[in-house]
Image (cartoon, rainbow, N blue to C red; front, side, top):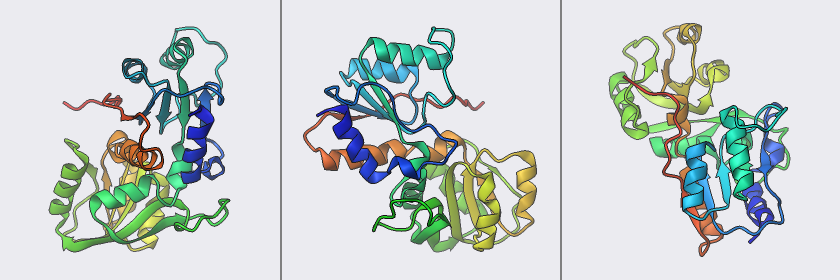
Length: 266
């Protein structure tokens, strides 16, 4: 298979036209005509991920986050971005990034989060009918909202989040003694959707990268839970491995074992 064959499959799942305007998605490094010996799927493309790809004889990395986000003015090994790009070029490794195209996909990042939390009757939190092409799998847009099988006390819900996402701590807004039944989720930086979650009458909103003043927006109406950026998106690579393995079952598709979370907890 070629790089183009793999990217065609990925773009069936999440066309690049679904990405946000600010984003940098698609084939970032490599030749579409190159033959692929194996694919390594990762959340990020860092040096440890490239080393893993080399060890596993994978000459294509499919990552969620784009390693190249802003324009590169030079390619010298002076920063982590340039080091990764240079190493990939030297070893003939292609890099493909999906990011917000997969965020907006009906079966993408937030669908996976909702599945992991066991939400039922799941709908899109911020529907975007302007995304083209529209597909039959479901509505497109950011975030999801659904119902827990049974209502939970706030602290029990927070414990549930810690168990599912394997995070040692969660930043959250004031507990108000309200049962949690309707839950909104949005992987990655989701402060922009707090009002959407409140408008949909969610009991809790699970996301990441909330700032100090964002928590005031809870206004005793909703539980805001910041579980961490990496933690909220960590299952994206599992989603992609599962998808590619179904499409090309006899091909070398590997789940990256490298931890790329830059945040440590003490």
